[in-house]
Length: 258
Image (cartoon, rainbow, N blue to C red; front, side, top):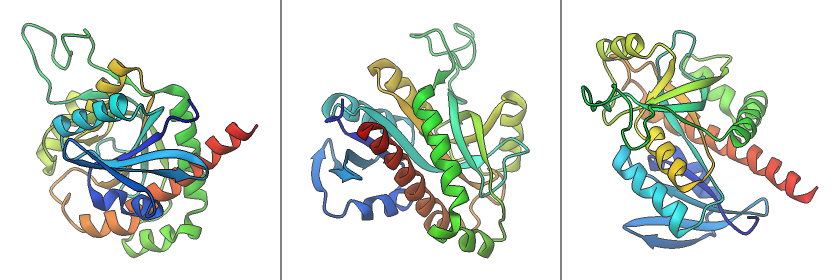
């Protein structure tokens, strides 16, 4: 297990830039049109890659990580749109469960249920998610060390919090207030919405690979969802992913050394 790499994934390069820069001396392996960076971080073997945007691209990448690279676990970082009232821009959501909000095989099967599995929700790995949540909280507490407090303040954001719960995925960028309200009404437990997590969850379930997903809230999935998106990803989400992953890998190394 110790020789198997930990997979670090984001959908877009902007989300993973800080992580990729940390692995600048890693070797690159190209598989199925994707570049995978193989290296070590705090002595832990890692493989970092971009999933691409959407559930099909995410599922393909997840299969490659599980079957080709034999990843010991997958940690997915990036951004999402906030749905729950208490989830604000700049906050962080650590997923406990995943659901495809646009999956509907009714009336043959209940809405959201994946027929092959007879379930709508897929759970994140409990132990890994606990570690990621602790890493996220540690990163928030040390925000000044990573320049995150200044970046948040520049965007008018303050005192970010960590939330844990349901993350929903679909093959569209939710960017209107009407779409956001419809999702809130249909799935009131959902904390945030994005485009890849549930696909990774289903593949990792099938392949027996532990998964944890942490998303920084970049917008409220409404009519202003595009405002300062690129700036937010570059100045907040990407450095935040770096801080969370670094804290997580330090904990993994400490556990391995004990």
